[in-house]
Image (cartoon, rainbow, N blue to C red; front, side, top):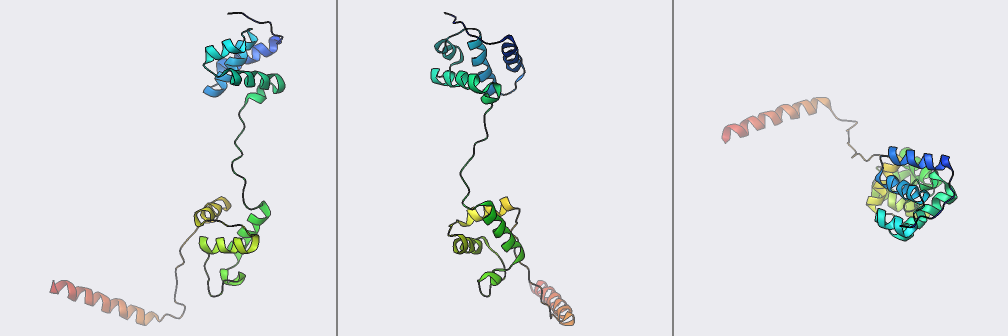
Length: 179
């Protein structure tokens, strides 16, 4: 193997050697190994054979290190798909769902938010179409949770309820005796 002359400082070589020995990440170890071998004078094609990486990948690692140093080798968090709604629109959605009922925003006679209703509201307000599952993901991201409404009769007669419970209990006992 033919070694080529490189012009790296001793502090750079020491830093890469230390990182190579201390990193726990396999990906970062391989990147540091590429740089270390290049500092030792190996050609890219030889480094690719030693590390079983594509020669183009080896070149990318070396150029990145030369341009940005060690920090350039650290993988960046993938950005992911862009959001359909802006932060302000998400805030408005959150405020609307948490403070208003569907009836307040134009869904006559409906008192509880569902993902389907929220999808309709977002389409009407912002012109953005969401699936119900996508809206449930949005709820989760915004810290909203879905609960089913329970109804309490405000004018329920307590005496009638107690009498029903007694009558129902008696009916259940009678039914058990017949079987």
